[in-house]
Structures are given as structure tokens and as C-alpha cells.
Image (tube, rainbow, N blue to C red):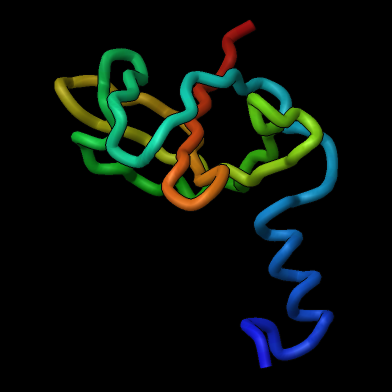
Length: 105
């Protein structure tokens, strides 16, 4: 028996990894890279600061290199150096992370 006990479980898990539906508006792509690579979100590196889960609904984004793929990103905040930065992040694939920030336009 594989990782999934039945087809229904497999389909539900696949939806979590590759959600269907419209892209979430109001967010812009910042970076894709390996876990730990330098990323600056308003001057703060998320790999060097604690992430605070905002418990908001996740957003759906397109993969920057494969726009037909959809991915779910969790919304968090960085709080450091007197600044607070709201962002969305998630793994596109094993160890490859994407970061998004709210688009003020």
C-alpha cells in the first residue's frame, strides 16, 4: 500500500499541494529559491527572523516559471528592527520556496 490509503485521500492531498481556482488578487511575487537563500522582504530576511502565523486564509498563486501550476501560500508576519512585514510563503517543491508580498496597487 502506498502513502494514500485510497483514491479519495490521494485526491484531497493533491488539492492541498496543487489547489484549483482563481489566483488570489493583491499579492506580488518577490522571490523563488532554496530554503535559506537570501530573501529580503522590506529589508528583512525571513530565514533570519521568526515568522508569526496570522491564521488568515492562505492565498493561491501561480508558479513563476510554470504559470499553469497553482500553489497555496500561508500568510505570516516578520517583526524585527521595529518593523512588521506581512508576506505569504510556501514550498513550490521540496526545499524550493516562494515569497509574495501584498501589492499596494
